[in-house]
Image: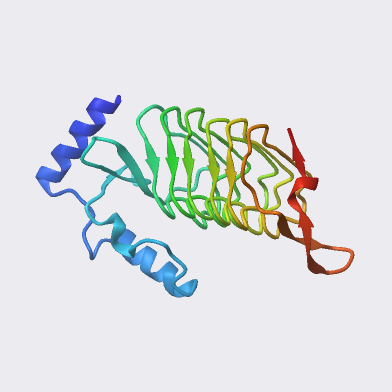
Length: 222
């Protein structure tokens, strides 16, 4: 279905009452997951309440501007193409997924906090992505090289404790504190327009078996 058909589908299901409620299985799943992980979540666990489910995998909402939010994903595919209808991937949408390795989406413009944190993601294809959130790729161990050419700001802890080797962002102007902290495999940052970035990064030195501070400019390539 195209985006307009999806909006109508959501509206119809809301009218029929076919939405996630507080006692729905997906809410219990999230709450149980919080218990297992010491409540390490950004948003209210009831953020899925009011969502419409598609294919028993995708829990989606639309906002007042008819932007489509992917709120939660519970499938077991390794690769997903969101086509041209998802605009925003909400906080924790894929977080801790045991299967996902690749996600594409032509119209995705924003990733909220922790959206892919602690997953097996290897690659993404969001050609129109303009904004990423706090910790969105934190603790990802298979993502090695990533290019995000419409991003202007890399937020705090974006790649914290990940295994990333290289990052390219041709429009990046600001790198916030701790964006690449504890990335033990980091080799280069290609940021030709960067104006503001931390003087030092805290990286793990495997030879010394401890964290050390290294000048970020040593990794920068213009």
